[in-house]
Image (cartoon, rainbow, N blue to C red):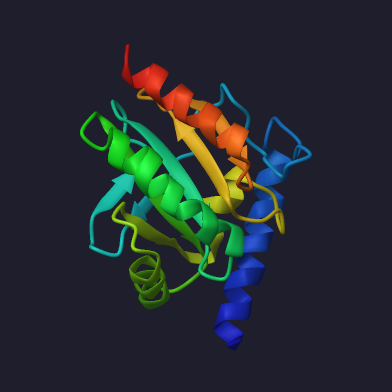
Length: 178
């Protein structure tokens, strides 16, 4: 690992620690520092195709931030289900699914996207800037954060649990059916 990469990782951890201490919520048992009912933290992501998304630009759209990484086996197992059962099902509605790749360079994220065959947007999260506003240090990826059109967090998943995944789909469907 390069010195720059180590420094960025250390900076990300420092940001997370500082952010955790500034949060109204302590880290829960699943590593989240946000809760259902919170506003999504401010963010801006640029996907591998060059499209930029932000917490402000996505107001009016229901979306899922899928936190992932190329080295994560559970993420790789979940992604085909996200593609077929979430993205393909809801993509024609005011809905977006964004894969947020934790601290990997754009080239690696592009390779990862191609290897998984997903068609939803994938965006690098350099230094874990967004991730560490959502979850604490070393708490692990394979997380889905469902955000409604008002920017409020309405559902959180951790790891790939079939019943929790199905509950997430029901929540998304319920929001989009209103």
